[in-house]
Length: 330
Image (cartoon, rainbow, N blue to C red; front, side, top):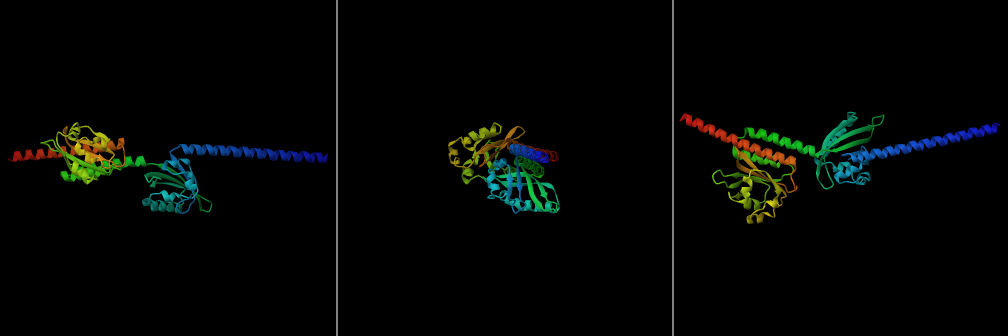
């Protein structure tokens, strides 16, 4: 009888062990499924997640698959072939390292910072990194968890706003045309997408257009595109008074323009400048990188052209006032 009871107890214990093992396996499977689902969600959102070891240049233990938005693969980081510090812009790397060290020393749990990284193709992107510092009970950092968000477009829009603001301040104190042309063209060339440009002035008497200032164009361009008569197709295009956005090659209208076909330009913009509904000038802006200028860039350069028109109107009004004062005195 005692033996039967012992066997029964033993069998019950084994059954409990099997049940516990089954429940543990079920819990593990459930946890794995949840982990897979979580990773799937992470890979669908526009952020990249990193798990770094707190070592020089931050070797990665884990990186989400959407790191491919920067041209890299997961394996490049997790294999140790590529360290995260290798893709931080060289001009920002020291600041990023210094900021992380300071936050660790001050026992921060998490913090954010903005800096630039380089994509695999060499393109510069701005990112906002939220870093979570994981330390043990002794305060020794075990891991760094990073959430990387691409904020390049936001940075571009911020820069465009700053360009407009600074230009408005500069024009409010400018009194001379040559100085103003320098300010205007400098403002246009601060836009990342634009790397060449010039401003044509329209002769009030003849209607001819002359290139008053330029930067970034070749000597061939300056030689062949510095003057257009009033009846030329180029001048007539400007006199319509509407912005024109085309490929440089599509704007070559005359036989004289054949020399300009070798110019390394892609997207271009012709922006007429008006004062009192009269076309008085035109911007010719170009990009050797982009095939098309974005809407935000178009808005800014059209605003700059409008500011130039307002400046000319102000100068003309001041000249008229001076003439009136002279007449009264005489």
